[in-house]
Length: 224
Image (cartoon, rainbow, N blue to C red; front, side, top):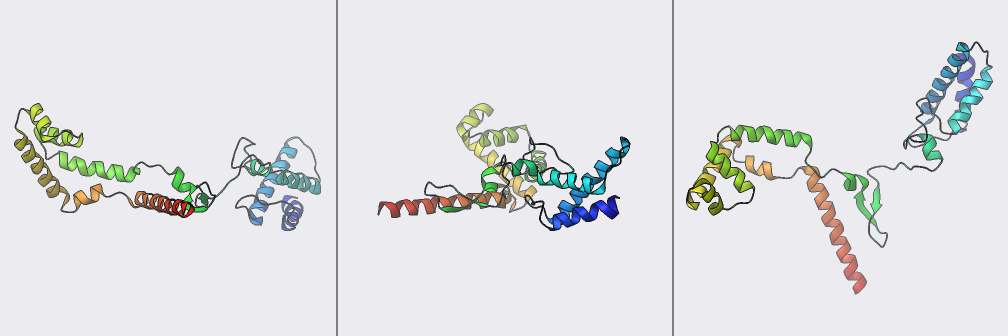
């Protein structure tokens, strides 16, 4: 019954546009969803020992599809569910869709992805940098490690020297020695690579600078 009677009825109804697609859905996907729901309805009827006409099953399934139900329907609490969108309780837009952010409503090249992106380094970069640092730290003794850590914390040679009970020039020598060992471990381009921001972060910064420059030009034009 499912293959020979119900599926043709469902396919014809969806082909006529009875069920409106939501988001990226197409006719093929809607048909598959409806067939899955029909199979589930038939199985439920068989368990209860009831005989149901093919046209009744097809009608029931199509009406449920029109209201936004799907085979994996999660209810109105699911913001991605078609029913939630059909009833106007949520709207799904592309993360790459340009949005307007200035008070005049001018379109901007900023996207939702730019605004919601995590500003922290990605995990691959962090893990790689940690491995690189481990290879450097293994070559430093306790005194040089302290110089390295205190320098990263913003302390000057005199402050570090007081903690190590050495002179400021000696601290500078230890710093230089740390730098030489880092270059020996990472190579001549290692330090530059470690301090260069990842491409996606540079792109976000460049986009923000473009928007700021455009806003400033617009403000000067309005004042003129």
